[in-house]
Length: 509
Image (cartoon, rainbow, N blue to C red):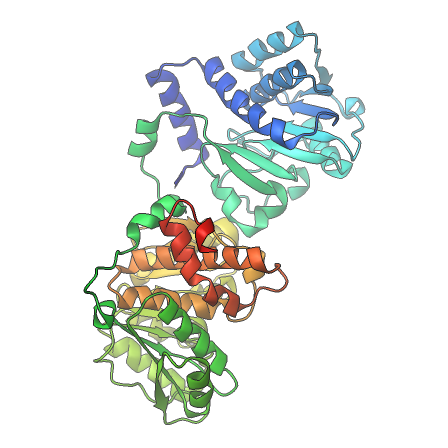
């Protein structure tokens, strides 16, 4: 699914009006009617509804919604927030239509006319939309502040009022609606992908309002939202006479004294993701623990008792994952340098391997082309030597991927995958239960496994991240967010494959 900027969305709206053809008012009616059908499932009939509309087309959507809700028998009040901007023609048209149904909106022109809102009421926020060009001010800012303080359940139309669709760095969040739920039209908004906007966007969902399909298909964007339909075609099908040699040999370089579990989780995930053979190169102190926990994996014991001191011969292997539980001992630093210098096979670089690179920045210049780096935000900020967050951190991620010709998997609620060509793919699967030690080790093993099987690096990253999140989602159906552990994610990788490959999955649970 593509993600477009607010300017691009306006172009798609205009193309839809021109090419269908449909009038602007007709498109507004279509969007609001689609949202009305969704609201009928969300709002109990006895709930008191307050609709706040601004002067533009987002406000026009709100007025159409108000009319439809009134005609459906809901108790509601409608408020028009005067911002100093002229009312759009579609806004005026729908204000007239609303009044003809017997509902007269209340004009809010100064703070004294802002109504009291009960905490058991519902607010429909349609003050500002994707066309916002400057922060809310004056009475509009005060309306937003009062709505946020009301304690009411807030549903935002398309985008929370005051939230920019892209970069919200430096904005005053007191004057952005804190939506309980956002119902957005046609595409996710880029701002929804970033942790800093979670309190404003709330939970969100996308409604298809039938914008012009050919225009959407032809319009290029570097931003994408990865869903099952994107991943299913990537997955390779197995043939009857395939054998373990067909599916590659993955090497996991991981573990140090006290962290045999990291190597075990990564190697186990590599096996569960389909590698024909998996070898874990780990310190001698970890060998027995790993072999007892994972008899299906082979072990290459390192001479070091507490940490990795020697790079094994890479000739037998098709891909290498390095970093989980590795430590940052000087001997291990030397091993990582040799790996980066000698590897002629795909690499996944994670955890302590990334911490080593952040401390020894000369190693960044020898990252093999097409390598996949899997940092969490703190690790990436150290790698990129930046203190940015959210949108600006994503821009740093894109720049880093281009500069070092690698793929950067920036882990988070919507893990983002930046490729050297400048595209960014945001993941749709996963849940807060996955915020647990070892979850990243499982991801490293999964991506390494896909690389060993011959997947292209970008495909391995996309599929690995999606399946990893989906395995966590399947685990959550059995456990709670508090109780999911990394082993639960590992054990549900197979179910994640099944759910991705089949439309109906109930028979496999």
